[in-house]
Length: 85
Image 1 (cartoon, rainbow, N blue to C red):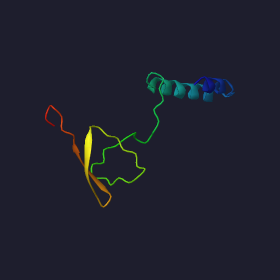
Image 2 (image 1 turned 90 degrees about the vertical axis):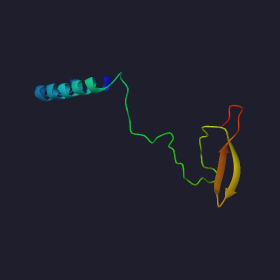
Image 3 (image 1 turned 120 degrees about the horizontal axis):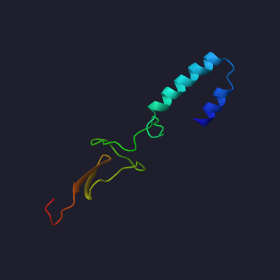
């Protein structure tokens, strides 16, 4: 925002400079903790019925055992543990 302040001082028209300053001050009040929130793609999504292929990136949330591959689909089951799942 410092660059905006520098540019603002270069505006010769006093009325325009004061309107711009008011708008900039309003924007500053809307920013939270100085962070800039940008639109982005999510890091991960749940796609329960998606077909996965070689080189796809997946996230494993539990220890699973592959028990079948059919037409490019993987079938997995949770590994059995002492606590019964």
